[in-house]
Amino acid sequence: MMLFRGFFLFIAVLFSLSTFAQEQMAFSSELNKTRYQSLVEELRCPKCQNQNLADSGSGIAVDLRELVHQMIEQGKTDQEIVDYMVARYGSFVLYRPQHSTATFLLWYGPFILLGVGLLAFVAVVVANRKRRGRDL
Image 1 (cartoon, rainbow, N blue to C red):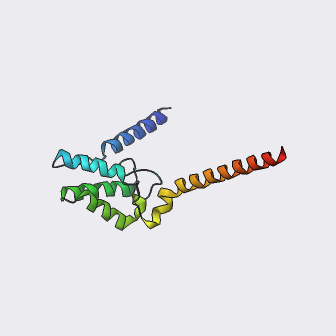
Image 2: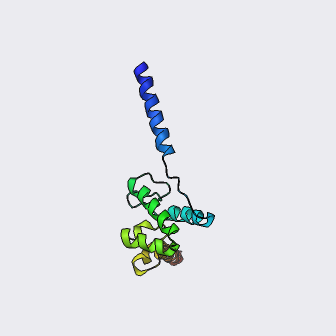
Image 3: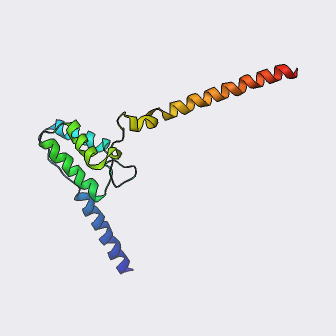
């Protein structure tokens, strides 16, 4: 029993140390800190399916958070940082993909399908009314 307590205590200390060891980044201004928070919440982790850099605990997310911090402190604009990430990891890292021919269906596909569905519904209703008119 004492062995289990020691093991659980060890695990608890290990988790608390890993939580404590999270990045404590120093920013030169509050604006840079706000930009950092905005960017890491808008950029998706390349390893994770659906987590942003802020929420992901993967190694690459930690590295990318540090890189974003460095680039902000170097004076890079938000667009330069996003462009770098897209050039390096592809448009997957963007939660809101850019409008382009490659993402046309992503942005407008649901509306096109809704329109086709409405047209089909109207066609069925009109056909039923015509058929009922003949049956009477």
